[in-house]
Image (cartoon, rainbow, N blue to C red):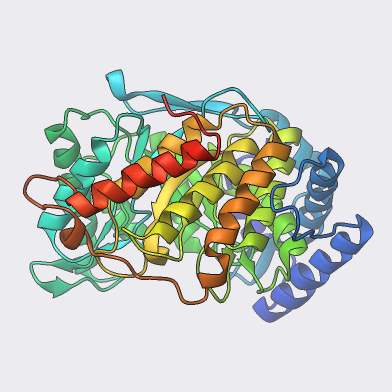
Length: 455
């Protein structure tokens, strides 16, 4: 595989292009062309397809799309482009698994296949959702760390430092990044999981400076480091600086991308192609150990709408069938904690991911945009479901996903916000309210009625 320095050289010497032209001509036009060329069609009656030829067509379309489109660097207004041979070489050299964490908390994130009997890697947490106080932060991270089958943590993001609102690019962001890591590591130690990997321990860090600063206060090379793309197919110097630093220190990079359905990708078909193409960018530019993807709806701000489950399933099958590169999909529900809808969304999304060959990260509830609207019970439920469906056939999983969609999809435009953490959990004891515990138990029983077997 070509070196990262060669990637940077192409960021300075690649073809010049305005960002507008890249968006409209390189991304949107090319997506339409390959979708038409490969005859890719969305079927709303099949949110979890079992057509191998469809998955392979999406993969081949993504290969052509990325070789023609490349990755855009806004700072230089140039395209970082790779030919087909370079892409194929990168796929051959890509990692097929990486151990995250330390000691008894270490776990290998591996590549899976559709309908695999290999248990998925399960990351739990807030997906960077905002938290109002350090007390709530510590309590909820302890709750996440107490989930027995949690393989890694995705932490919340602090919003203040000593009562001052964190502003990106300011010293407060640096302080916030440092404090996030220190608090998360201490919370995990308190629940006996000191080696549990943190895959976004710098949730408060947006800039490269904050990432580098925060890395010296508790983040480890055995943790995961999320580096997000700019929609679509863009990486600026801020993100490339992070790659340069983390590859030099031996950090495990998670190439994070959230292609927008209804944006430059177009509909479900185009979004599936772009989601798959991000795998190639993750390997070549991010230097990632896995694809960390969350195709998201432009209007609803979640990953659980029916057309997105199709997109997620097809893209996951495309990558898992045609590469040995691990997938760690990321979930954002429309509904908030302590609502039936949130549990239904979680179950449908987890099934679509795991049966299609991916591992999972659960979850950013209430779109991970409302302060304190998160809890450990919904992620725990997601992990329960993920392990209960290992080995399930895609046809059976599709029927189950359709049944779950019928429970919530008509509410996705106006979802219930649910409860704040402090309204459904005791912050001091870390225990859920009786009402929340009852809802969790009832939703598990309902899943058992649908045929899932929890051990």
